[in-house]
Image (tube, rainbow, N blue to C red; front, side, top):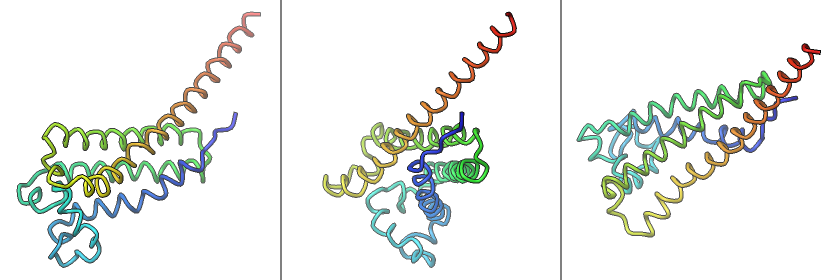
Length: 181
């Protein structure tokens, strides 16, 4: 049974790789990447975002809050796993690719849920200052995308892995029962 590599999953990984590296670059290069920094031109959209989400803003940087960079470090690990998935799926055609993709997407989903829960449990300490329209357009929708798509990927890869495991299990049982005869 050949392993399937759904194109839409590969497109997600391929599309998010530069976004994740770009975001991590902003976080690791603060304050130079922030408004007024010499490298801000690379991350100019963050000029708006650092005021919407204080996790990315000056306050978090000045307070030496570690969450932003800790998450960014894990984003790099996740991204390397995404690259490895694409390589294993499309270059090597390896049956290991879905397992690596599954592990990577669990990281994506877990970190995103943690990010949302952090906001919930601190009473909106980083985004609660926004009006509803700003919050929805610039925080909920973009960050929600990182919940919805990974959830679908998790479901699909989990289903594919479970199917493969059931197939191997049936073959093993057939093999064992064939030896008894």
